[in-house]
Length: 437
Ligand SMILES: NC(=O)c1ccc[n+]([C@@H]2O[C@H](COP(=O)([O-])OP(=O)(O)OC[C@H]3O[C@@H](n4cnc5c(N)ncnc54)[C@H](OP(=O)(O)O)[C@@H]3O)[C@@H](O)[C@H]2O)c1
Image (cartoon, rainbow, N blue to C red):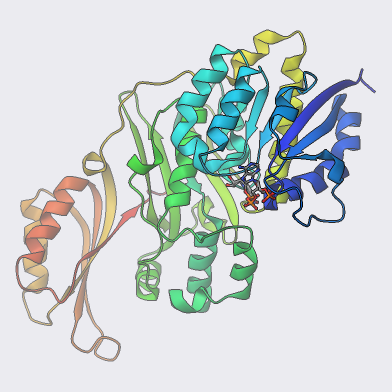
C-alpha cells in the first residue's frame, strides 16, 4: 500500500446530497485509502438546524451550526459545499477561501452565476475550486475535456443534461402518450424526489452548461444569457412527425467552438435515428464530444441523485489531497484560463431545421410557403403536405426540411408566411442535429 496521507475535510450541508454523500463516504473510504493512499477524514458538518432529526447512520458529534468551528480548525484542507443557493453560501465560501481551504462545490445555482468571481478568489489564494459535482449526476465531463482530451481541439459537446426531460420524451415516444400522461409516471416521481423541480423550461440545463462552459472552456457566461427552451411545449404530434422524417426529439445542450466564436444553447432537437445520443433513454446524463484527434467520443451515466454526485465528490477530495502535497505546480492543472472568444447570438447560427406549418386546406398553400422560403434564400431539402381528415379535420400540415440556413433568415421567412393568412396556428420549428456520420 502507498504511504498514507490524511485529507481532512468539512461538509457544508447535510440534506439530500450531504446525507447521501456521508453514507457513500463511509462505504468507500477504506477502499479509497487502499487504492490511492489518501485517507479521507471528515471533521465537521455545517447544518442550519442542530436539532433536526437526522438519519441513524450519521454521527451527530460532527454537527455544528457555527462556520467558525471549521474556519478555526487549521487541520481542515478541503470544504465540500452541499448547501445550495447563492446566499449565505457565497459569503461563507469567501471566508473559507480566505483561510486557504480548497473548495469542492456541488452548488449549481451559486456556480452558474458566480463561477468567475469564485475562481478569481481561489486563484489569488492559490487553492482549488472543483466544480464538477454541481453538474448533477456523476459523469466526469469537465475533467475529461480538461485532462483526458487536453491534446484535442474540441469542436462540439452535445449533451443531455436533463435526465428527467429525456425520460419524459422517451416515455412519450415509446408509449405514444402525451406530456401530461407521461408526467404521471411513478418512475418520474421517484426521480423527481431528489430534485426540487422538473426542468420543463431548460433552466437547470442552462445552469449546468454554463458551469461546463466555464470549467472546460473558460467561457464566462451567466446562465440567464444562454438561449434555453425546455420540453413544456412538446406534443405527441411533434414526436410522431419527427419519427416520420427519421428523427427522435432529444433535449440537448449544444456547445460548439470554432476559431472565432462559441455557440451555446439548449433546446429540444431533432436527432437522426441511429445517432449515438439517441441510445440515451432514461434519467442519464450523456455527452457526445467531437474532436480533431479522436473523432467522436461519448460518455454517459446516472444523471440524478446523491450517489452519482458522491462519485465526483470523493474523486475531488482525492484530487484536492494530491495538491496539498508539496506538488503545488499541479494546482495549475485545475486553474481556469478565461477565454475571451465571443458567443454567437442564436439569430446568427447556421443550422438544419424542421418547420411545420398548420394551414388552411386549400390548393396553392405549399407553393406560397416554399416561395416565401425561397425568397429568403433558404434552400429546402423537402416540402411535404399532409391532410389527415380523421385526426385533424380542418387543418392541413406542410412539413419543411431545411439543410442549412442562418436562423435569422428562417425566422424572417416564417414571419412572412404567418402574415399571409393561410395558417391555422403558429409554425413550429425544431433545429436538427446533423448526423454524426
Ligand atoms: N440532491 C442531490 O442529489 C444533488 C446532486 C448534485 C448537486 N446537488 C446540489 O447540492 C446542493 C444541496 O442540495 P440538497 O438536495 O442536498 O439540498 P437540501 O436537501 O435542501 O439540503 C440543504 C442542506 O443545507 C443546510 N443549510 C441550508 N442553509 C444553511 C445555512 N445557512 N447554514 C448552514 N447549513 C445550511 C441544510 O441544513 P439543515 O439540514 O439543518 O436544514 C441542509 O442540510 C444544491 O446546490 C444542489 O443543486 C444536489
